[in-house]
Length: 175
Image (cartoon, rainbow, N blue to C red; front, top):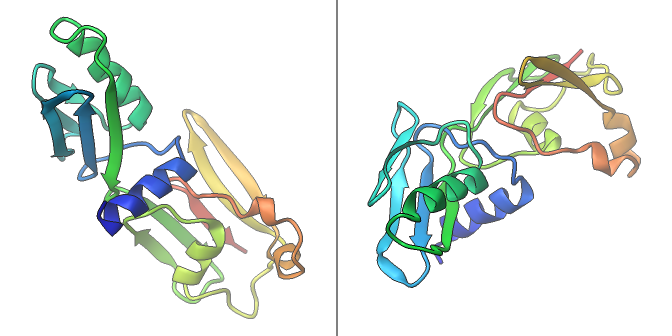
């Protein structure tokens, strides 16, 4: 397995809620049928094409949801189809870091990040940052969540569970 594929699968395993987006790469396979194995790129419109399935909108879905939809559509042609879908290239993942950091901005990376990694990409915090009041702003449907993050606790080796994986679109706000 190529290192990039292994890294993408590892990231997916860490965050099974990852939502597929445009330009992500998917590896789709049907067990015992090599003619139904393909690596596809999600088009800018969020769709893919797959043999016997046709056009399928996948943007915003998880790999599990895509697998279930492909299996459902294939049942007419391949009864008891065992389908696997893996995200092998993450291109649509973007997080934002703003406030009292050295390089605020949008970060488009090909892998998932946790809060500390995002802060590192932003060049770390300025001396005036309030390390105990950092917030992760996340949209879930129509709701907006504000998740607390206390960097001071992490420096002491405490509260490690708060160093969560960020989802695409999350904003790390450093007051």
